[in-house]
Every structure is written in structure tokens, then in C-alpha cells.
Image (tube, rainbow, N blue to C red; front, top):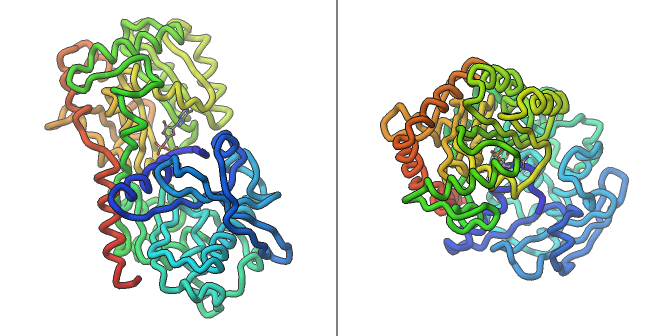
Length: 462
Ligand code: ADP
């Protein structure tokens, strides 16, 4: 409905699996004026108005009629604020997120609902645990347990005290909980106030104490409330046997034929030869993902292994990186292609049809791309960071199936590409690795169980 990255994958899948496990999980999102909303049917179940500072705004709660996503979906519609097509990047996004949080709390409060758990995701809803506990308005809900999941600890959603009057009346004794470094910091506030927080992998939990854009000290002191749970993947959407977005099924027990069919379709689409090893990158073109290193690394590898390897790039993001990657199309017309943009269907085909998927991330809280790659028999080439440490074992180690490297730099990337090209020449070994990785279980069933146990552990608070 409104996918930008991994957060959407989680919020779109976890509740479905929680419901299958017997919970009653619903999702509340801002209204986005996008395809899914235009094509779905909704009932307005609540209507009210509220204040954002001195400005009054109207809001409505829309409920999707059919539960077609596997859970009840509620949207908060606020004309003028939450009725736009893009998910992020509006200059008034602080106002958007605060109005969203207040409308959510008012709706729950005024409609006399009493959820056992409110599970918040990332800084956009980081003020909810604080407001529940320290605003007299929501006294009825003060005992509601909150869980907070960090998908990306680099973004805090911080803003200045000039916007303090956007908040409803709060108990000033506790106003310090809002603060970090002289500003209101929703991520820090959530970590301080929440009963439990989770990160999307155990290694990322440890890394936040070392690298979280200024919150390192907080993560050290609040470590005991944290738990790392690796994201699952939606195995119904990402199923190499039934996926309608790929060129043909890939049998996990005999993957080579299916892989080849998809590779041929993919290569044909981009005018590449299907005989060479195909290395792909999918993702946001940002420094966090190591995308700035790609133009130089690809240039060096394509020169060093001239005519021996193909590289395909799908992504969008920083304009300089987009431009530098696009130029390579002309420099290496036979062996390199860039597709700038977001294309879900193409992503599926790339996971299915590539031999290798490169992830040179500087920061990777969990990373889903490597999980999709593994499920489709594509060897992940990853930098050892965050969730990539927890999910990929180098093929040189016992039971391994991936290619791992330590530093986010051009040398480590080009060296890993060389290893990939050598591995590709040993087709029996490659087939063994494909079978091994396709047998791995990264389903939500496992991860949802861990979230459910965490909820259970909060029961005394309920
Ligand atoms: P992040 O949330 O940091 O962007 P994740 O690895 O957790 O990274 O999730 C990325 C998700 O977004 C994956 O499902 C990936 O396939 C998808 N994705 C990223 N960029 C694109 C793109 N340009 N086109 C299609 N899908 C993309």
C-alpha cells in the first residue's frame, strides 16, 4: 500500500502471521493517496477533530472493508495533511506525524477501545508511549503496554521546542523524557518510555550502542529493555515456486533449470548475455547502503574481468549516484545496465534471475534483500554488518552459502566480485549452495513466535 523499504515489509506481514497464530492484530497507518487506497473499499468508522497547536484539524478513521491483507487495516485521513501520494519528504512531515499520533490516541481513547499492546514502529510514532503515560488526556490507557520496533536507528525525527505546543497537555515533571541534546527526540523518547523495544536483528541491537547518530549512550543504558528479532519474509508473496512476477518456477530441490529460465528472461530484457555470471544490486541509492561505492567498484570489476561478468542495478536515491551509475551504461554497454526507479515486479525477476546479489551496506538493521535472494537461490554478497551478520554465512565456512566481506570499501567489493566469478565457474558447487540456501527457513512464522513471546512477557503490566 505504501512501501518504501523494510518497514513496510514487516508491518504488512507480521500482523498476518500473528493473527494466524491466534492473536488479534490490527494495523493503523496514515492515509496515502495511492493505488491500493484508490482500489480498495473503506468504511468511515470514526470522525472527530483535534488541535495541532492553535490549528484545528478534522480527521477520519477509515477501515478497509474486506481484511484482504490478512488483518484489519485502519487509515487515518486528515485532509490537508494525510491525503497525499508520497510516504515521506514533505516539509511539514513533523506536523503530519504528530497529527497522526494524536488522532490515533484520541480515536482509541474516545471510542473506548483498550488494546493490550500498542506496537509502534520507528520514530514517526515515537511519542505515543510517552503520551500514554504522561498526558492526563489518555489516563484511561496509561496501563497499556507499548512495544517499539527500531527499523532504522539513524533517523530520530527530532524537532525543536518551538513545536512543543503541538503536543497536548503533559505532566511537566516528565517532560525531560522527550528530550535529547536540547531538542524533542521521538526515537530517544520512545526508548526511554517503552516497556520493551526491539531491533530487527540481534547484531543491530549491539551496533546501536556504537553507532546510532548520537543515541549511543542511551542505547547502552537502556540495553536491558532491548531484544533483537530478525525479520521474517512473507513466504506467500516471495515464493519461488508460485511467484507470478517471475518467468518460471524455481524448484528448491532442483534449482538450476528454473534459475536459468529466469536469468534468460532477465538478460533478454536488458540485452545481456545469459552465459556470464550475473551480479545484481537492488535498493535505495544512499550512503547507508554503500551505494556511493558502486560506480567505482563496478568500473574496476568490469575492467579487471572484461567480458567475464554482467552487472545489473535497480534502485533510486541520491542523484549523484544515480548519474554516476547511469554513465556506466555507455562505458560498458555489453556487460552493465542500470534501471533507475522503484519496480516491484522487476525486483522479483532480479532475485529469481541473478546469480549473485550485492549488498555492500554500511548500516543494515536487518536487510530483507538477502533473505529474498536466499529464497530464490541467489548467492548474497554482503558486508558483515547488522542483520547481514545474523543471516548470511560465508561459503568458505561450515554450512555456508554466501560471500561475506568486512569493510565497506571498493577493494572489499571488487575482491568479493572476483570470488563470485570464480565460484560461478564451479557449477556443481554453486548448485549445492543454491540448494542449501533455498532450504533455509526465514519465514515469519518463526519471527512472529518471538514477538508473541515478547508480548506475553509484558502481561503482568497489562
Ligand atoms: P531498507 O528498508 O533499508 O530500504 P530492506 O532491505 O530492509 O532495506 O528492504 C528493502 C525492500 O525494498 C526490499 O523488499 C527490496 O526488494 C525493496 N526495494 C528497494 N529498492 C527497490 C527498487 N528500486 N525497486 C523495487 N524494490 C526495491
